[in-house]
Amino acid sequence: MRLRARFVVPLIAVAAACGHPEHAVDPPGPPVPVAIATAHEESLPELYRASGTVRGRTTIALTSKVSGYVRAVRVGAGDSVAAGQLLVELEANESRAGVGRQRAELAHAIDGRAEATSSLEAARAAEELARTSRDRVAKLFETGAVARQALDEAEAQARSAAAQLSAAEARVRGASSAIEVARAALTQGEVSLDYARVVAPFAGRVVERRVEPGALASPGMTLLVIDDGGRPRVETNVEESRAAAIRIGDAVTVEIGAQAPLTGTVGEIVPSVDVASRSFVVKVDLPGGASGLRPGTFARVAFATGARARLVVPTTAITSLGALDRVLVAEGGRARLRMITRGEVRGPWTEVLSGLSAGEQVVVDPAAVRDGAPVEVRR
Image (cartoon, rainbow, N blue to C red):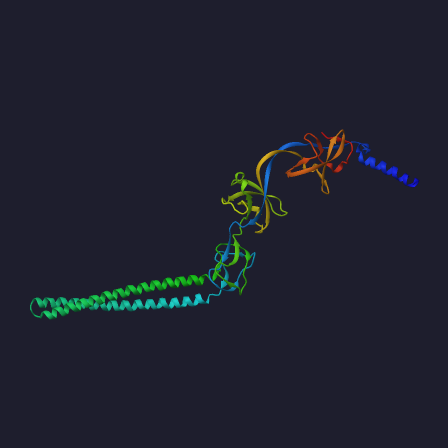
C-alpha cells in the first residue's frame, strides 16, 4: 500500500496540469516577430456543384443500315480519320448480285427502246406512204379515173398506218419509262451496296470500336463512335430548382481529375427536364487548352448561384494535423493554438465555420512559431 501511494500523487499532479492549461508554463525566449491578419467577413459567391462527363462537341455513332457479316474494320479506338475515309466494310453479296441484275435490266430496257425507235421510224414511213397514196387516189376519184372502192381502200390503209404509228410512238414512250424504272432500281441497288461501306462523315477521331471482323451486323447496330476531335465540353445534370440561377454565357469552374481548375462557359441549356431525375442537362464549353481531355472523363462543375458574407482568414494561416485544422491566434503578446472548422477555399482566403470570431488576429505564417511563444507583431 505504501509503494502504490508514491505513484498516485505524481499521476494526479500530471493529470491536473493537463486538465488546466493555464497552469502550463509558456516557453521562454525573446518575442518572435510575426505577420498577422485579421479574421473578417467577406462576401463570397455561393456555389452549386454538380457532377458531369467530358464529351466531344460533335459525337456520333456510326450504325449499320444493312444486314451482313463484317468483312473488315480499318480503324481502332483513338485513331484519327479523314472525311470520307473507309472505316468498316460489310459483306453485301445479295446487294452486289441485285446490282448486277439491275444493270442487266437497264441494258435490256435500253435495247428495247432502240428496237421501239426503229419500229417507230418504219411506222412513220408507212403512214406517210399510205397518206400520200390516199391523196393520190382521192384526186383520181374526183376525175372519175378510179372507182369508189379504190378510194375507200386507200383511206383504210391510211388510217391503219396512222394507228400503227401511234402504237409505235407509245412503245417508244413505254421503253423510255422502262429505262427510267431500271435506272432508278439500279440507283437504289447501288445505294444499298454503298451502305456496306461505312465511311467517316467528317474528320475526327474514333472514340469507341464496338465491332470486330466476322461479327454479324444488323440495321441500327452501332459499329463505331467518332467525334470531331475539337475542343470538348462537359455535360452535367442540374437540379430543376436551379434553373433560374443558370444562364447561357455564365462562367463556371470545372474540376477534372488532378488538373488545375478550368474556367468554362455555359454554352447550351437543354430546355426539357428528365422526369425520373428531375434535372436538366447543361453543356459547358471548355477553354482552348482543354483539347487533350478524354471523352467520358468524370468532371465536377461549380455554378455561382449568389453570394453571402463569410468569416475568412488567409489560407496560409491554417495548418492541419490529421483531421484537425488549427490556427495560431496572437493574443496577450503570445501565440495561442486554436482549433477551427474550415469551410471552402476561395483563392487566398479560406472560410472558417467555427473556432474564430471576426476581429481576432491570426499568425499568417505559423510554421516558425510554437503554441504559447511570445510574439511581436511586425508593422
